[in-house]
Length: 112
Length: 115
Image 1 (cartoon, rainbow over the protein chains, first blue to last red):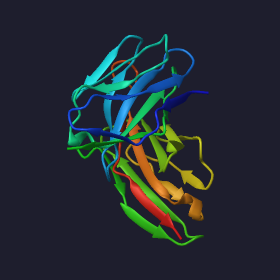
Image 2: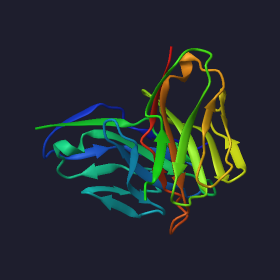
Image 3: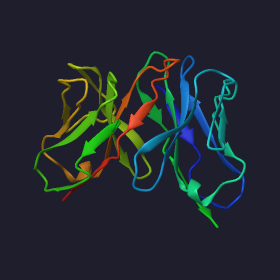
């Protein structure tokens, strides 16, 4: 079945540092890929998405590129802020499916 | 436009009690789902619905029931609460979108403790 593996946290960075959170997936066909963010005490919000190979999703300075050859969708941001502290989830929707499969989440803490 | 709403925000139950977690959306989305979130486990799908009158089981359905009588509402029932059901529960709704991606919109969650 479909699965998502993302790097385990927690990750602690200083403000303005570069962020990478790795995400790899297993799925048949061409899934859609997502990054969701969960701020403390809140539900999940869609951060960005990509629906086909080589697509780049971007939002709020975050980027991720859908790499079919490496089955990856790594999240990056060039300069993190304290307000980026949250839990980040990588997820996929399999081709022909309605359902999302989530990774276990990576907690990011950004310190001033 | 309220999006996805969930009630209650917090609930404490004793083992064996039953209760219903409410979920409603005002976006006319056909697809709705329930997840539970546990530390180190990510989100796991409990039940989902592809439209009024149609429901199906997800990854962890045991101990939970759902029904979908309207497009807007998708309640989750705990039949006989157990401590293993202590968790945070999220409801979500989605629509196909431009590329059929079915991006999901989440409610704020219900934090349930079973003692």
